[in-house]
Length: 513
Ligand code: BG6
Image 1: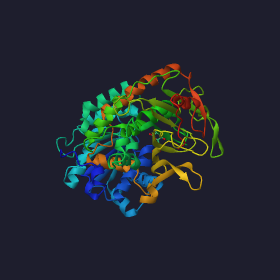
Image 2: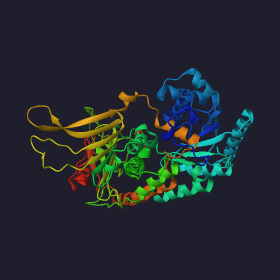
Image 3: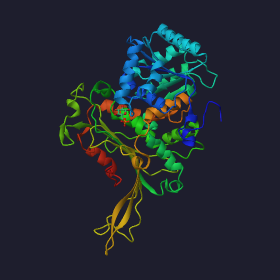
Image 4: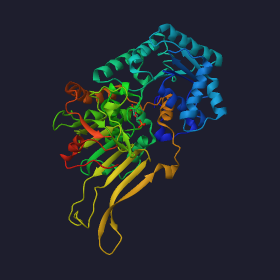
């Protein structure tokens, strides 16, 4: 194995042996929401778990001038408000002692030179090289200037050729269609080599998403059944109870297809449907993901097609009245942005031909739940024909990604009594009961993996483009149709009738998660 490709965490588990080399993490967009909610708490929790290198430095970078002390105060407040564990003064003190702030524009080369000098000064002070890890957590409009300035200032190639060289993490959204994703990949490649690049999809950092690979490939009972002979359909749901809240400005440019389907649900699909990789190395896993994404048939749009879109209308959430999307702050009254999308996919390969994969994601749905449900074919009805005495459900293996993380299996069992009656019963494995509930947040795993140089849980450039290739025609067709064909669903419900129709053509119904 190459020196800069460490063994994957699935093989070795999270242990202190996964120690990262001396690192300076530079966060672009340091006063932003994501930094406070996720990034600073992730760094803090890595410090609590002793997973940060002894020489760890954090630099916030942003347009607004902020004194170092004030930035440290903001970071401490972020830990207090958003960390899964309480702020421990001693641990935080160690992080804060090496936390500084650099003010500068994203298109201002001299500011990047200042940043480079600041990093060089840290190296001089501690007497050793540190690998820079740039985290681009800004609005996408400044991704390109940041990347280009990292190139122009020499920061992108710092320590290149050594094991611990400069790396860059790029937040979503990775483009808004195929052309913009290709352009962004072009800019990235003009400055960084692919092995330095970590495109984030935070769903890959979730414990249960990683568990999907373990369940699939560390157990022998699933693989023989994991194909068109035994599986009837697969349903992937990422439902949210929240609406757009104050993010109307962003969401209007995005919508459910770009925000959730093209990235998060497609990642769940790729891990569910890919062939077993030859190893758990980043390239082996990502090769298989790209292969299965390429086998997906183009989507048909329009009446009788493979896609449905809708906006939430007023409704009831937890018994309380809830506004419709068009009444939300910052939303155009004639907005054609979908808050819900459902897709029927066909994967044209030996394993999956003829097995529909259904994806759905929406805001303001009945409850927050993300799951992957594998529905098996029904048994022949010769002995227990469905009817009054025999209440039968298709066997379903459901990976519950969140909340209440776990795995369940629906079987049909006999109801105790002298008469033979059947009823679906559920076998449950729950993380919280087996392992306790304080699991690491996705960003902790991802920041650590990037520091170590493990790209398995990040999106490769060709992977992002393959997914956009599938969805760009749908987005174009929706943009041209404006509101025509836009369905609606009551806030607090499970989605619109058009999504049910997608399934009813194959005599399927959405599972109630
Ligand atoms: C983000 C989307 O990527 O994922 C948000 O932009 C969404 O709109 C969020 O709410 C959901 O993430 P999670 O981890 O809460 O399921």
